[in-house]
Length: 203
Ligand code: GDP
View (spheres, rainbow, N blue to C red):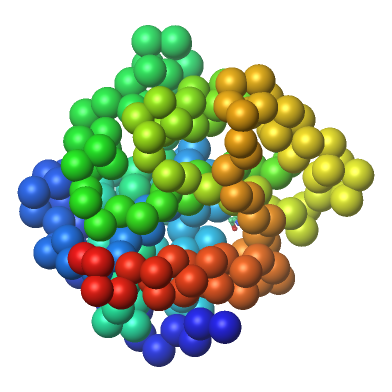
């Protein structure tokens, strides 16, 4: 089990070239605004306000780097999902976020946050499809599970997985999380720890 000794805010920017040196494993968190991204980051790092350093909750419009245990980067990416038209949907994967995602060499995986209370959302499916098409490794995190009955939770998650399997032969790894109970914390940190170990000497 990974123990978090230190979490430091490093930099917010909109230019991938200004990100910190790409010599440590990096994990980026993204999802629709209000999905619980700030809460999850704070839960993982056991800091009340780490993810709010650079702005208001749900309003992050920058790439935010945090250094964890002086060993790996946690990145808070802007939330998507304000826009409703299909053109805007496609734009969830353009601009500086896309540039960051496709160019960042040390980006090991993207954590795509999905609200466990909702059935599959078009914008999330489109975003994950874009990641898959670009060959970017990602995992799914179903947030706010404390708000769900187990039957409702299973229904939404099964539906997400079924839809993913319409397009892909394999399912990405998935996690359940609750920022209020810290459910999922150990599993997510262990997953990151295992990947970090695999990356030793490779970056
Ligand atoms: P962000 O916009 O994705 O960063 O979302 P926030 O972390 O700011 O969360 C949005 C709202 O959902 C806030 O009111 C949070 O308190 C609430 N929230 C986030 N995660 C959880 C969770 O796991 N359980 C519950 N019950 N509420 C949550």
